[in-house]
Length: 222
Image 1: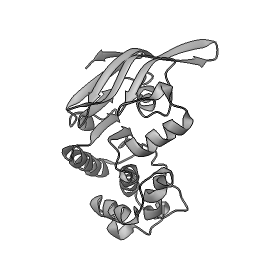
Image 2: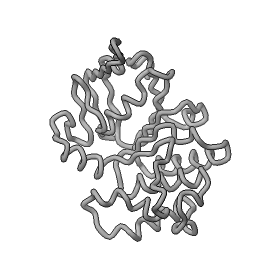
Image 3: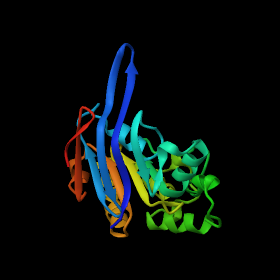
Image 4: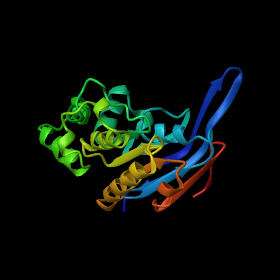
């Protein structure tokens, strides 16, 4: 397997009033193509900050971040936007579906920034894969929480990313819907997709092949 993500001595500090918060403190991390990684740790340990930097949604204060061969700290905003659109899929706890768009239209939303064309049929294929073929024309408020999360996963996959990042993907779901998302993530991992999830769910963490524990902005266990 080849390295798809590399972080070298990554540091990130935020200011909270007069206090400086070291969200990430000297992080060294390599993730290989096809790995399923769970990032765990207490609230405030730096998990979401780490995910945002891996996803090129935030930049470190110091250090080097390389994603799919591109060093993000040397890219301008246009290059970062292209990298996110072509390489990374995002899934969040809050779903972030557009309320006035149908499930199919929400899945197609990232294609506005993609170089790939003719993706309407792929959107239908993805909705079928996540078990929502018959819900393609429904608005988000006509879907259950589990269905909305499956739409969000289909949306994250529309551009055929190399890496799927998931921030508490089952945090708003009941146990039955969470199990359905677990099974779907297992399938995607079996297909060779690199999965990185921030989670407090032991049930999800146990499915990952690698667990990275953060504490006070540092990797305490890997």
